[in-house]
Image (cartoon, rainbow, N blue to C red; front, side, top):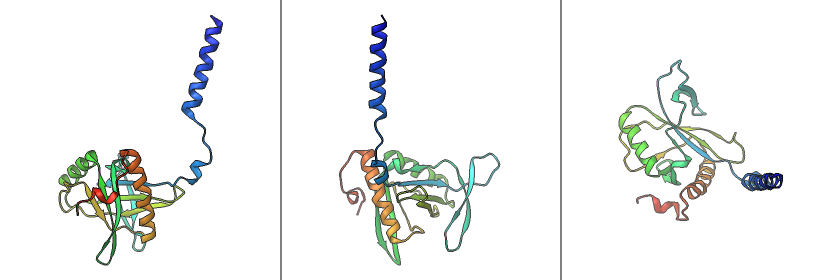
Amino acid sequence: MKVCGLRFNIYLALALALLCGCQTGNKKNERVCGLRVHLETQSDDTGMSQTVTLLRADPVLVSIGKEPILTEANIIAARVIDSPGGFSVEIKFDESGTWSLEQFTAGNPGKHLVIFGQWGKTVADGRWLAAPLITRRIPDGVLAFTPDASRAEADQLVLGLNPKAKKHKKTSADPDDFFSR
């Protein structure tokens, strides 16, 4: 009976070692990348909202809900596009993200979607990027915004988001294939 217990413990230890894995230097080369979309809310004392600062050149305070309505887990593809006077970032969301985006934009005209982006090698390489005004319902799952970022930073953000989208969706398609032309 003691032999079976010992064998069980050895098998359990091996299984845990395989599940936990070995964390080698691969994490150092991995880029930190994320995108969070929050909805503008009224400031309150319940702890459900927080105030954030947007725009580096002329800072503006905005109250948002603490929980994001969309994250990088909902992204199918991202790209930087040229627009009049500069560039913008376009994000295409999956089916769940499309439904959320449609519901929140349909029910909250006149409010802002507040977008936080993260890119680079550390968590500190990120900031509040934009707060586009909700003027209409967005039924197609594509959110476009002009970020408070340089073109190089926007490119880094998109480069980081697309591999994450591929991991989540297990696709190797070109990100531009997901956007309607």
